[in-house]
Every structure is written in structure tokens, then in C-alpha cells.
Length: 440
Image (cartoon, rainbow, N blue to C red; front, top):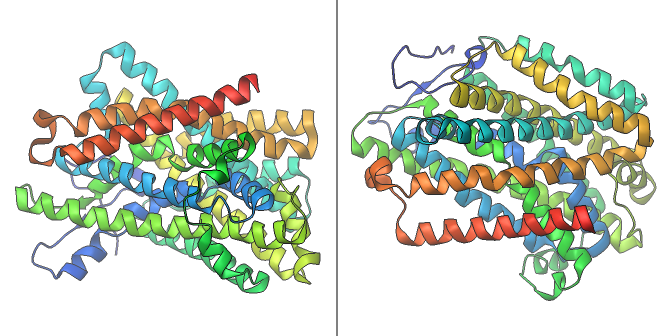
């Protein structure tokens, strides 16, 4: 079925090339309405399992076994809370976060926020370039430089998706996420972790992060989980579900969007936990506690598992992770540009600009530092994202707590307290992480 974006004033912005909306029948059963609403959360979840998260999860599992699994759990729960605020904002106001920032802040403040948001998009795309290039290097045997060149041609995939409809894009993302999940499920079957130890790792423990090194990694996991561009993206794409304008319809939409968000991010939690469990079972338990690079993990899986199948699955999952994040990053870039500047350009042009900017540091890093550049640049991309995150979180929390803007959907006191606690925690953790990176 092919969808087209309705020509109505309240229609949400979506890139024209992947535009499309799903009309939700209020008389349909709850299960059917939930299926109609499923999709936006899935696109958001992709940012929670991009290649930038792989580096921190692999190092955490390799160095500290299952001890930091609880950090992955808590970071994912924080992400669920924040993303639910985004979906509520979009449904209640009919506008996305970028549009509201343009309307409610001064021109200078809005432009500053736009610049920071664009930097986060480029940083995200840098992680995707590095992840895909590394996957091509591992699977095809090409050099990292050649792998980076290959990633430049993913614009052709964006062109191929033109006019395919937003629902079609969501189906493609589901296939890529399923590929990642299946690969790691098979990996864990092959590795055979000791599950009682795995489950105990989800129990919060201050002693596990009492030293500077594991605390640094824990903050890295937290800072890499909630992506700034996802806040803008979610508040926009949740509006692709067309609902009635009455209060009951919007309340139903908020509830269904919450189910979609929590369910999708639960899948991302399982994937991120699987990466850490894989590293802990394959490397930490066998004494290889110095595996901190993705390519090292790939090459060590062969002798440890007893065949090349596990490492091939690892490479395929990495490629699917990087490529799926590319699509969502492109849509987020469109949303941010449209919202802050009221400027709309073809999706492929947006993709070309973003990828072109991300290729520059990728090429320079590999040229100057060789293969060792991948890990360092991935960490750098997460630091950049951490720096921008509070600038997106602050207006989100302020706006969802504004009674005049949100009406009956304004945050209640427990939600406000939780939101500001997460803001303080994430901002403080990111500040510490950046301080360690700069002065450490």
C-alpha cells in the first residue's frame, strides 16, 4: 500500500521522499490500533544500537565481564522515559521539538541550537561511516579507506526509497533490526555464556563503578545511549499516525505511542546487552581483557568459537547497524533543518551534505592514525553527542512541563521530577566524561 502525505496544515513534516501517514481507525480493536501505531519507536530504537554503542559495550564486556550490564539497563530505561516525552510533545502540540524551539526562543538561541543539532547529526553519521567501513573491511577484505569510499554511495539507497512511503521505510528498518537481533542470538548460542552470571550483572552495584576506569565506561554507555537527534526525530515522526483532534483520541495516541516506544527500546536494550554479554563471555572469561576495538573482537571470535561463522555474523550485524542508522540520521537531519530554518531540500541532497561532512574526519583519521583511528573516532563521536544532548533535553523538559503549551498532557509532578533528575544526571555524567577526555 502506498501512502501520501495529506495536504493539511497540521500535517507533520516528513521528508517528501519517504513521506506517508497512517490513518488510525478509532473504532478498531486495541491490538489493531497498536499495530497501526507501531513503527516510529522502531526508527528511534536504531539510534540506540548504532556502531557508536558497540565500542563502549565491547570494551565494558571485555574488561569487566557482566558487571556493567546494569548500566545498559538503566541507560535504556532513561531513554524510554525521555522518548516518551518526545512522542507526547508531538501528539499534544502537532509540532516537533525543532519547530517549537524556533517559535519559542530568540532567533540567536534557535540558530545556536540548530548548529549544535547539525553537529550531532554529523557526529552520528561519522559513527555510521566508521561502522559500515569497518564492516566492509572485515567482510570483504578491502582497506578501511576503500570501505569509507563505499559508504559514500549509500545515497543511492536513499534514492531507491523515494516515494516508497513511510510505512515501507519502517518495514525495511524492521528487517535490519531483525538481522542484528538474529545475528546476536546465534552468536550467544555459539558462545554459551553462563546465564546466572549474566542475570546477576543486571543488579545495580556501586562497587562495580567505584574505580575511575569502569565509571568512565559507564558514563560512556550512558552518554552514547540517548542520541540528541532522536529527540527531534521522535517528536516529528510520531505525527505520521493520523488521529482525531479530540482529547480522547490524543490520549489514546499517547498511550499507543508509549507502548510502541517502550517495546522498541526494549529490543534495543536486548541488542546492546547482547553485545556486552558476547564480549564478556568470549573475551573476559577467556582472559582477553584487552579487547577494546571492534575489529579485534571480530578477529578473535574465529579461534575462540572454533569457526568463521560467528565473526561473519558479527560483521553482518555491524553493517546492518550502520546502514539502518544512516536512514534515520537522514530523516532526523531533514526534521531539524525544516524545524529550525523552515528550509526543505530533497532528501538525497541532505544525505549527500551530511555524508560529505562525515567523510572528512573519517578519511583524515584513517590517513593519519591508520586502523587504530576507528576506536578513537567512535569515542570522539560519542563525546560530541554528549556535549549536545543537554541542549536538546532542556527545551524538551521545559516544553512538556508547560501547561499553556501542553494543556491536559502537561507533565505531572512525578514525571517532572524524574525528567529533571535525568537531565541533571546525564548532564553531570557527560560533563565528567568530557572533562576526563579533555584533561584526563
